[in-house]
Length: 162
Ligand code: PNS
Image (cartoon, rainbow, N blue to C red; front, side, top):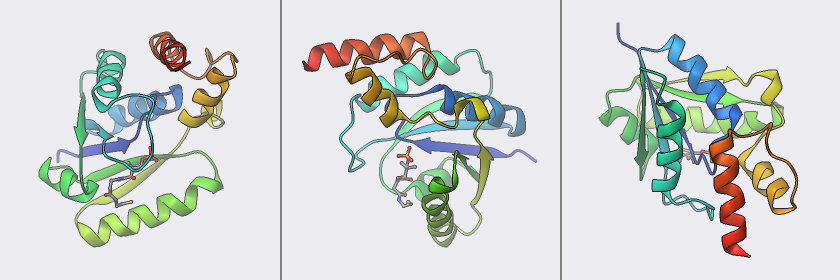
């Protein structure tokens, strides 16, 4: 049976934590669709096109990974894509409540859609896109948190904004 997973998120910007989940997911599922959410209420540093572009470059070497963007309900998008799984990473207990709620809402909306949670690799548990942006804005090093390509784009964006 083909198991297609949608891995949704803001990815503003993509981090090593995200890439760890995508890489591990690509070994477990037939296909992983990385789905960049746009029109989310959060103010983002990067446009959806920029986030999709970075993710396409970074996941290029992984054969069974596709990058796309979506608007509206994740459950509707996943069903339309023929996915049977929503893949999410969990870093700490603090992530649990949101993931728990999201998994239940998505199952209510699409009963055949199951959520699979992967534990984020221990090297990456402290990384979040917000921490990356904050450290970079305060001129800290983000080299251990994001790939070079992302680091350069974040630094350039901050320079543009100042
Ligand atoms: O990276 P994030 O910000 O934790 O991702 C959250 C995201 C985008 C996956 C979530 O907010 C989402 O699925 N948004 C789409 C709208 C939706 O379906 N909402 C109901 C389930 S929470």
